[in-house]
Length: 234
Image 1 (cartoon, rainbow, N blue to C red):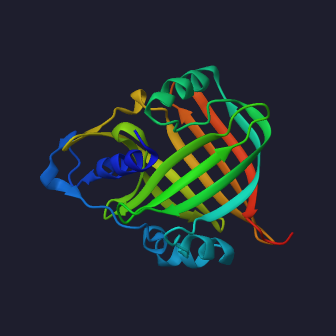
Image 2: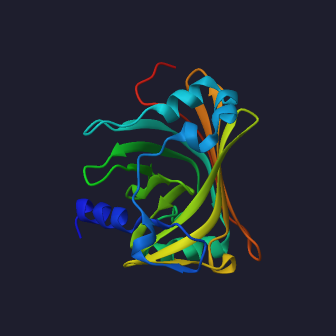
Image 3: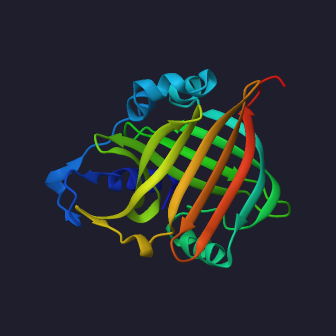
């Protein structure tokens, strides 16, 4: 499958049912829209965010002009369970970095999609002595909140909020979209609760940290790094 076809397939599957049942049919699916982070966070929380965070998450990539950030992921850690899960998940599109590492150069790209009103988020890891590893997801917003979708119909619903002037993304539940049906996955059968924090460091830099913690297995993934807009001075 080509890259364009893979993205199109992810977008078709990136829909969420309106009801809270285990399964929902096609009639209940909500078509995606470009994420509006001010609405997702709420007016008061949005005002409390650092100004540079508001600017970053207000900007939308134009066709053919991705928004790119570059930096170093100082820690790319995972447990043995996480390492195994990352290898298995390469079958559905590499939603997790499949190797451990320290001080790994990483490029983050936000790209407009020609297939639908959605934003493609790429993280490209450059491990020493290995081919670059691309971790891709698609983010869309619905009245129920933000969705992050990966390959083969899998994804998660995210809460987006401000705390300590930082922007937080916290997984609420995972789903599997199968044709016209959506299956909400039991928490124990998921990678765990994902928590991403975007913290502004000033001078155009920000800190990205991500942890995924399973109820029984503990912390299965953890990453922490510092990034800046590509080509920015300093």
